[in-house]
Amino acid sequence: MKITRQQVENVAVLARLELSDAETEMFTGQMDAILAYVDKLNELDTTGIVPTSHAVPMENAFRADEVRPSMGVENALGNAPGRIEDFFRVPKVIE
Image (cartoon, rainbow, N blue to C red):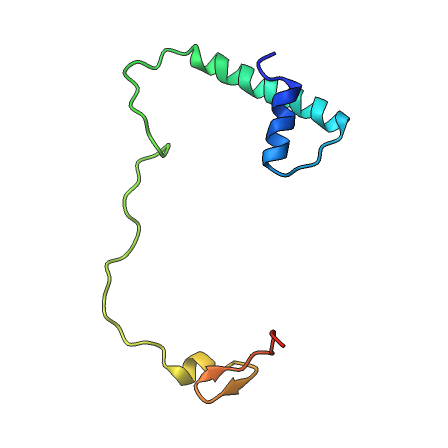
């Protein structure tokens, strides 16, 4: 095993999780299986492979900034259920 029960308990303490004995055993097995899979992936020859952050090439999808008129107070507050002058009226949440 690559990971021990003690390591799982340590991670649970750091994450502030309270695990039962059954959960600790289950997570120990699952985390060990994950680490075994990563070891298997490490066996692959990746020389000449360029690291990528996306599977497909991406370009900036944002539009260029342009100055445009805003929607205006009347349009923004037109469907508001409550309104005080130029502001949304909301229920009081602090006493």
